[in-house]
Image (cartoon, rainbow, N blue to C red; front, top):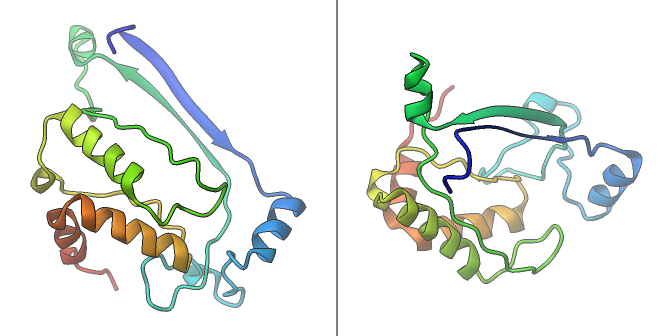
Amino acid sequence: MGWVDVCIAGAADVGITPYSLAAFGNLRALSRRNDAPQHALRPFDRDRDGMVLGEGGSLFILERAEHARGRSQSPYAELAGVGMTSDAYHLVTPSPDPTQAIAALRQGLAAAEVNPEDVDYVNAHATGTPVGDAIEAKILQRCSECIVRRFRSVPRKA
């Protein structure tokens, strides 16, 4: 938006509590693969059975490219476009109407001035829940058949 040359942006999620585990467990949203935790989270897999809660944080230094170059630094990545909408549907269940999510993706593409076929990678929300995966797949497919084809064409690692 042109407000600053450099900023720090970050967030943390520390949400694993007895209450959150009980709530997601009661919703049947948690994976039950307790005997094989390394295989528990399986988004978009036909054998998925839910999500795995985690905690984490991240911090970024965001800087105008010309400002970084002025310090003889090369940018690592570019934030080329952002899209935001809200359907205010439900706290944990995605709306069955993907209109708002599709609009956000299209806004981001337009802001970045790129076409869907220019997209090499999609970082999906991918909770591994049947309802979440189905809606997210519908959103990606409706936004661009090209994105879905590229996503499916990535070879799986053994």
